[in-house]
Length: 374
Image (tube, rainbow, N blue to C red; front, side, top):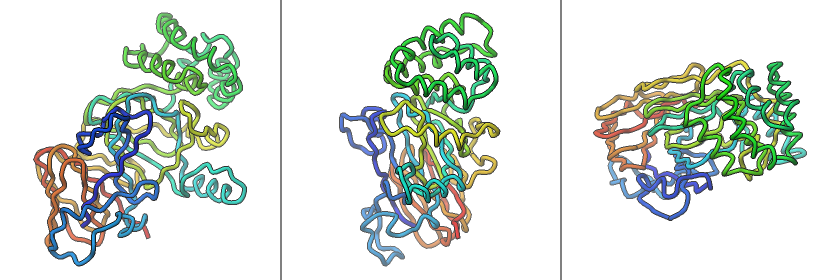
């Protein structure tokens, strides 16, 4: 077993000191993500302070990536704290990731961070707002057609052609400021017309206002009406297979993904945007999978699962990689040969070859399980 500390990412969309409950550190700056895994962009540091020389005979300096490969630790977990919308984005599957990675080695540009698929699940730790998946095209058209200058995009949506709609919006990027400024009124008027398949709640309407306020010059704001909107209650989870577009808006959650940092962005960001590449990997078949307030999160087709352990003990079988993160209070993790205490905000990584693990969580722990890869 390896005791680990998370790697902090202070992206500008994070909550100011939003990770302090798990890091114990207040910086006065946005704190966005706390990573637990072996990904080279932020491998977790081994915590030597909790190793007491039981059956271990190795030094615990360095990172988890010094001890385990991506194949042995195939998932990346994060505590995520969002104060404002993240980019409208999509992730590649294994085939597309490998092809894009190989292409960029030859001719560039540097689009992907690694050659791996990225699928993810988000478990809400507090109410979490997000644009996820596709809004019914007719409802999206109701909003877009009320923005002067986007008639072609609205026409495409009336024909259920999301790709053509996105292309039409992208072609108007030089007029983004003028077009984006119209969105709040377009949302209001579409709501008032009463012809959409569902009414928008205040949280959804507020998400549009926030996107406009935060990104007044970004054409990606105009992508958000094409996406559906959901609020996850604490304990709710959503699984996003590769190709499903999304933009997390605000809230705190626990996120698990295949060990990849591949993101293709369509806007709402000052990072590079690759609309043409993103369009080639969008999924119009698979829908997001929502799992409501369950202690076992095992999405169909996912390469990992999540156990929510609250106020009890649970057993994690051997034969899979296991990662336990303490969310509320200390967590005891033990095998037949060793024991670790993970303080709130830290974790324990257990390779597949180690035996059965018992996790005792008087508060709340998240346990991720994933088959080790060959």
